Length: 344
Image: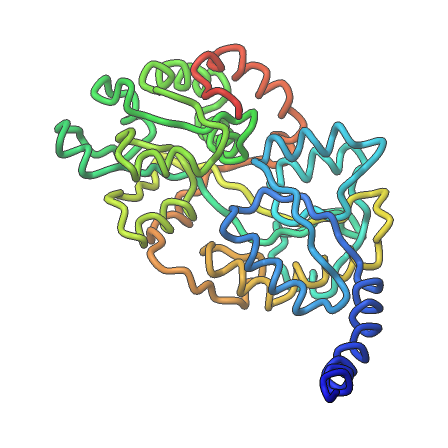
């Protein structure tokens, strides 16, 4: 006889909180966020943003840079993304040229390095961090095969590396694009294409992910993976037998940025996320993975970065690369796509 009153007493507090929980769920704004951030970063970034922005829920749509960019361009007339958070500045400038980014200057954007925000006023995008192309060199494989250690891009043309190099496909990978943008910037177009033609003889596969070549090299599948600094540092810190080489003849680099997509139905929430993306708290979050941040006053906490990478950046004209992106990628695909990995 006592069970029914007891159950009612236990249920009363739960029932009392139910309307609050329902109301909270109804008031939450779901932001569809397109990104090329690394998969392991997504849960951490989502937790941090949602904690800082009550009432907002992040819904990720994640793929490699080229695929995200192509998807955004295809959706121009019917945008499905609200915000872009973590995409190459090459892509953001291309989207800006297509008038696809909503002008908004986030709170605190004036404190960012000048190259980490668009030149428009209001801004159309802000930069988060920068990453550079790097060579992941498996020292165990090198010992087994008696391979020399490269120090320049030119060294990779050595026939000793025939079939032992993996590189990202620039048509699908932002890392691949920034790598060839560095070569175009330092060598000039004619010499850069000649270099890539010779390098192609030593390449075993072009992957559709910027991380994959370094992952492959870390596992010993190839001696060399052309990738980017953050992936190389992460794998080395985890104990992979790789040496991180920043070629002394100049490396391509890219900024990772954020923007609001023109046509979003959640502009107010998008502005809040942009304010967070430009904040010192968010910069500290980026600094767990990247050594060069948009805010000069925030010190990165990531360990193990090569000391020389900041001094070896190639001269890259982001606007010119964005303007010529389609032509560059079409020419690359015509010449080299036969060795690309199958698409999943």
